[in-house]
Image 1 (spheres, rainbow, N blue to C red):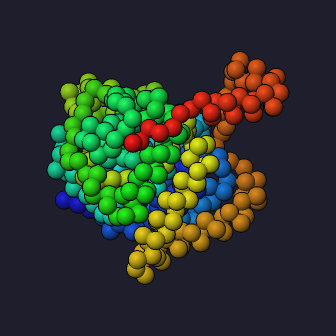
Image 2 (tube, helix red, strand yellow):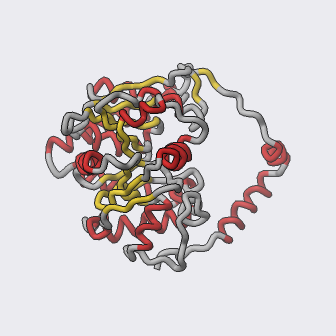
Image 3 (cartoon, rainbow, N blue to C red):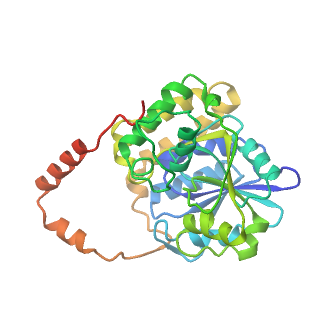
Length: 344
C-alpha cells in the first residue's frame, strides 16, 4: 500500500531465464500488495517455475489467460480487463527486465502518485528506443550520429549490435561502478507518440473508464491512441532506471555476447550484500535449478491452453526449399554487413 493505493505489479510471463532476475526485486518489496504473473505460455517448465514461485511467495498470484488461448503477444490483451480495480496502481514489467536500481518500485509508485495527470509513467529504460533518445538529447551518451525519436528505430530498437554495445556501455561504465545515478535526467513529458511499454504504471480507475478493453496492438493503444484521444500525455521518470534485456530482433546477438550472464553476475553480487536479500535470491535460484534439472519431463506436460495454428507464409514455404548451407552463408554475410561502433 502507498497513500491508500493498493500496489499491484504484473508481468506477461514468460521466460524463467529472465524472470529469475526480476522476481527477487518484486517479492522483496514491502510496498507490493500483489504480483500478478500473467501465465501466457505453453512451456511446461516455465509454468512449473511460476507455480513453485507462487507456492514460495504468497504475494505472487498466477493469472490464467481468460480465454483459454495462448498466442504470443496477441493473447496478452485479455489480461488488461482485470486491471481496473479502484484505488489501485498497476505496474507492468516485461519479463526480461533484468536489473532495477535500488528502491525502484517505491520510487516509481511515488512518482505515479505525484503525477496523476499522465496516463502512463515509465522509468528510464536501458534498451528502449525512446529512453536512448532521451539519453542522447541530454548528452548522457555520445552516439556516432543523430538518431531520431522513433519507437521502432532501425538502430535504437532493431539492431542487435547496437543493443550489445548499449548494454556493455551501461554495465561497464555505470552498473559495475555503481554510478548509474549519473544517468538521471529528471521528468520528461511526451505525447502523441508510441513507445515500448517495457515498464509502465497506470491507475486502475483510469483503465476502468474503458473497462480494460485493449484493441489490437496493446503498445500502440496504451502508449499513443488512448492518451491522445483523452488529451493526456505520458511521462518518463528519468531519475529511476531499469535494464530491459532484448527485443526479439536483438536477442540472438545478445546471447552470443553473454549479456544476460553479465547481468546475472551483477544481480548475484547485489543480492548477496545482506543475509535476507541473499535468502530471497538464492531461493529463486534453487527453484530454477530444480526446474532446469527436470526440464525434459516437465516439457512433456500438456498445455493448459488451446494452441493457435499459425498459417504458413509464402516466405516460410520458400525458406524450407532453400538448402541449409545457403541460409548459413546468408546469415554470415548479413552479420558482416551490420556495422558496429554506434557508441563513441
